[in-house]
Image 1 (cartoon, rainbow, N blue to C red):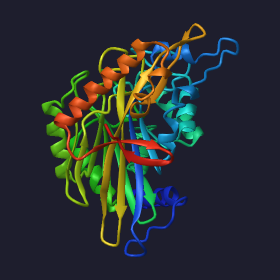
Image 2: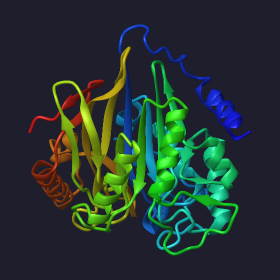
Image 3: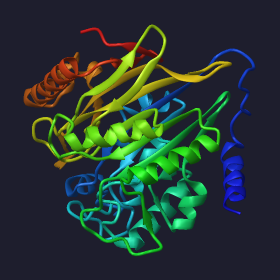
Amino acid sequence: MEIRSLKIILTIICLSYTPLSHGQGPDTVLTLLFAGDIMGHDGQIFSARNDSSGTYEYDSVFRHIAPFISSVDVATGNLEVTMGGPPYKGYPAFSSPDELAVACRNAGFDILGTANNHSADRGSRGIFRTLRVLDSLGIRHTGTWASPEERDIISPLMICHEQMRIALLAYTYGTNGIVVPPPATVAYIDTIRAAADIRRAEWLGADRTIIFIHWGIEYDTMPSAEQKKTAEALRRAGADLIIGSHPHVVQPVAAETDSVVIRDPVVWSMGNFVSNQRTRRRDGGLMIRLEITANSDTAYVSDAGYVLTWVYTPVENGKQKFYILPCAEFEKKPEFFQLPVHYEAMVLYITDARRLLDNHGTGFREMTFADGKWIGVRR
């Protein structure tokens, strides 16, 4: 009965895609993008509120980065808040207005990971409501479920595109000590369970399996011994790509490369995509862009890159605003910034991040999106 249900769900998920055709036609390319922590601190909630109408507006947050997100086939972000309903609150028990999810969709996000240490900030009701909001917006999600049975049926999340199927699995190290009462379900890091999930993905025909994982030590710029141990266990189990978040700062990216294939990519931490953390290294993050090529024999990662992003917070009409900026573009525009100190803070973030990635990263190149094309960054 369980296997039959899985086949039905997989068929439904793939209806909107071209049928798979391994062994037929030319190579095809799937482009993926991953973004780090989408936070909702009190300052962000206050900034988004329209004082006249009492409604909330987040679209402007993504104005400068939306072309990057919408340019790929599938974009995934880490939703590190609940849509738990009012009262809206930031740290330590996050619940953001539904309009944040609306803005994520409008910016081009197709999938939001919901497994992180704030998944249960509003208890099981917050988990349920978050899932309902995302479903109502047509945003796919993975990492939390309404019940164990639902997890068994719809996990892994399958991305189907022409000649390939990609499985996405999400896990978190914990939920800040909050016990999640059943039937609400959160995917905790468990390498034995993950191995079973990866085997299920293979049974479903996944050409590659991506692990979207919440792990590590907050504010450390290098991966911990536990991260490395977990990554090795996931690789042994068959994981092909590992994309990490949680430390709120950028950690290195690494992959083995030859002239064609990029092997075993791991992103230890993407840092903050948007938040009100303004101290050094916490005020930005990176997006990961991957190309997966499928031919008659296999599917493989053919390109891996990152985009440095920084959160700009000028005061406009007496209210602090939040804008996610692609660094490679705006480091050339000092005149854009309200104050020199803003530009200098972004340059410091860029300098720190590039030094870390240049010294400890391998296999990924810095990229930007300009004139409708993805290109390498010239420094």
